[in-house]
Structures are given as structure tokens and as C-alpha cells.
Image 1 (cartoon, rainbow, N blue to C red):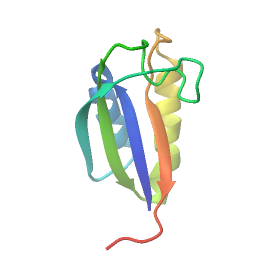
Image 2: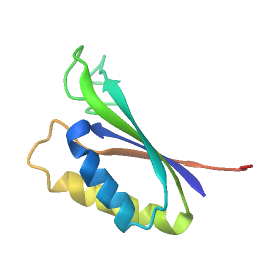
Image 3: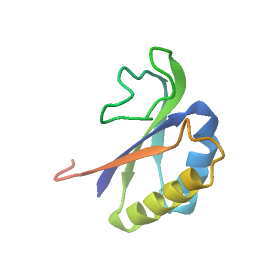
Image 4: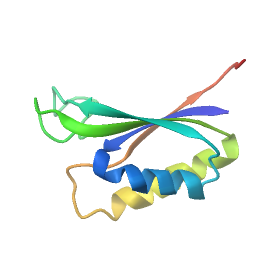
Length: 101
């Protein structure tokens, strides 16, 4: 099992829900978030749109089975490459889970 963290501008919330649904994810949580970017040249380049301005965003927390993860990455990549804007995209990270209770 992997923990996925997905962030995006709130306008992409429905798209992310569809990606998760069609990738076989059974449940997830979503929270609203204010996204900020302090350094456009840093490691998190383009995670949020504009320096020093709060961006209404969403944060998804997903516990996904291994067989779902690659498809989620593929669907997110497809979504990002077909967007007309380059200012914002869906961001996804995955973390290996060693143990759960």
C-alpha cells in the first residue's frame, strides 16, 4: 500500500476525483488548502501559481493499493499534458507505507 498526496488548484477537484475513481481507488479524503510559493526557482517550482499570493487549493490524501498507483500517475500525467495552462497542474507524490494498524 502507498500513501498518495495530491495537490492542485480547487478548479481541478472534480478532475482528480474522476482520476481516482477510474483508477480503482476505493476511498480518499480531501481538504481545502491555501497554497503559497516563496521561491519560483526552488525544488517545488510551479506547485502553486504566483509568489506571495494565496491560491485556493485542494489536498487529497489517498491510501492506494500498488495496482492503482501507476494508473493514477499515468492519468495525472495525461491530464497535465493536455491542459491549456502551464501555470498550474495536478501534483502527486507517493510514499511507501511500511506498517498500518
